[in-house]
Image (cartoon, rainbow, N blue to C red; front, side, top):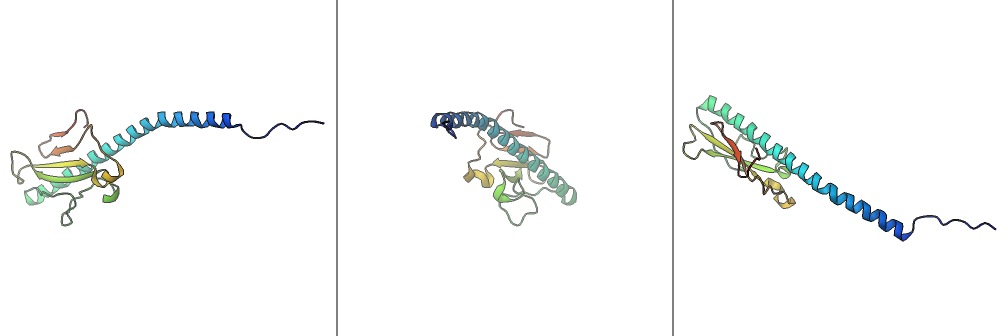
Length: 145
């Protein structure tokens, strides 16, 4: 009489396979999170420059820039970086430059967090991104623009 070979996996084989998958996932997670962080920064920079372009259009029509804060319902400017405030990585604000009035210079700032602060998105390395009507660009952190 012929004995049947056992079917399936042993507990040791299954444990080794799960351990290998766990190690590969841990290695891939850091690369994935860095990619997401860079994508969010690009979203913030794009929104910042779009609002700055709108401010320049505002200046050409009214000879003055317009200040606004995040969440302002009465502004014509987009105050968030994504498609909707609920999914945006940055909140956008505009104010007068440090040493000038709003009629001659505007500084647009993209502050990380936006609506995603509760989802754990924080950019501790770069912090807030900014650009002004004089052509100055930068970030709170180094090498982030």
